[in-house]
Length: 264
Image (cartoon, rainbow, N blue to C red; front, side, top):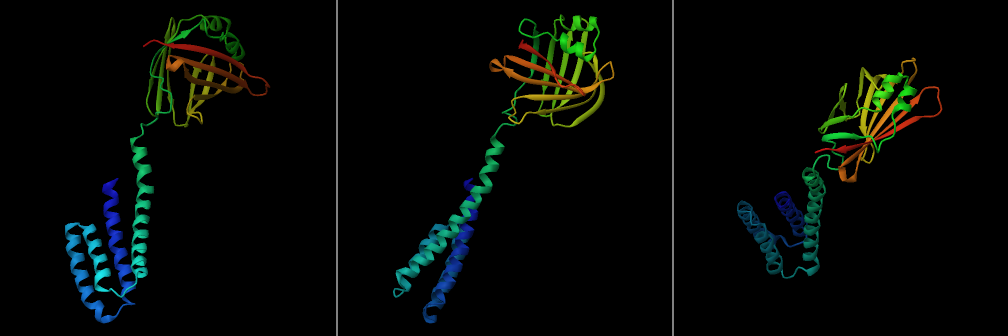
């Protein structure tokens, strides 16, 4: 930050002195001005080549006090005020445009979003039955009973933009790729006894929940929407999956809640 401020401040100090000095010289006697201006220019070039701006300012103030003793303190104060205002303004501008960039660069990306990476096991005892939800979808009796009793494990691999899920169990093998940027992914997929037509996955506004929205079609030909919400609890050691099904033309929704425990 100091490296950014110093050149900007020094440049504005120089230009401020040039501007203020020119204004004051218009009011001073010409016979006094010529010699001082020549010395001022020489010393300005010398200080600029060495980067010694502080010495330059001190020397100029000395010229004001001793070369023109008749000049009132009010005029010198005007020079100082003009110089300080320009310098402070340059520091303020550099601060406004530099600090947000520095803070955003040092802030870890996606630090405020849940991390689902790991292996998860479905906790049947703490989960509600998925059978009513699947029945409403039009799944067969055998599909409902099997899905409600299978011991499932899921492997989550998450990056900034993609979440991959691999669910495994007795007779179950399902792989899913979710794009986390809110894009609409149009593809047909069989899931929970229905057909998913398109998927949209995005973070909630507070970035605490991942919301997966599917446009679906049941085996009876009904259209609707299946929403799956994921969020961690118990300091990230457990994960809640909340299913909500709404079919077009029906008033209510059918829901189900699952609890998954982290294994690693």
